[in-house]
Amino acid sequence: MEGTTQGDPVAMAMYALGLSVLKDVISYEKTHVKQVAYADDLSGAGKITDLKEWWNLVNDNGPIIGYTPKATKSVLIVKPEHYDNGVELFNGSGVIVTKDGQRHLGAVIGTEEFKEKYVGEKVSEWVKEVDVLSDMAKPDPHTAYSVFTHGLQHRWSFIKCTISGISPLLRPLENSIRNTFLPALLRSHTMGDDERALMTLPPRLSGMGITSPEKLADEENLNSINLT
Image (tube, rainbow, N blue to C red; front, side):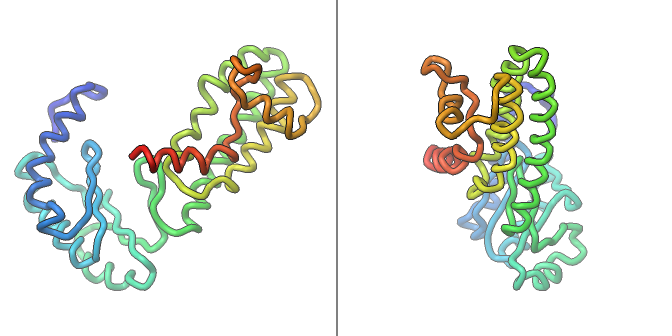
């Protein structure tokens, strides 16, 4: 599907209108596959045999409206006990079959091990960024504070909303904020629980708005589920 400029606010509406024709053909009533579409990303969930028929319909009908699925960028995630069946059914299709998991729109779908690995890699990256910002905070605390509150701490907002049960996985990040960044920013000792709680409050309540990713993860994930 082509015809919109990158970043054009009208693009999403055009994608929705364009895909509506295909969605009628592959609807749940006809395929028994639950599905969602975000721009040109199409996802389906169901039994493997139903997914194979659904995939065939997408391939047969998508190009007619300008939607050409790319098998090499498509992933079938199955439970371990269904892996062999998935490989057999999708043999020759080009679709990647996995029993582990896959990144999906900034989140993950798959096993607990895959989720932990994905989040762990993200946390390691963010800890390094917090450490760099901590070095900046020593000579220039105001700039470091602005960068953290207006930029860096929003890097992990999406993952908290979209992946459940990751609060313990975010502990190394919270430890870095608490034990490295805040002491450098405030030129003080490592703070206790009460002081850390005060720092999470917004400035209008005498805090600094430096939230704890570990403590907010479960709450923000639940809020996201309730809102959607």
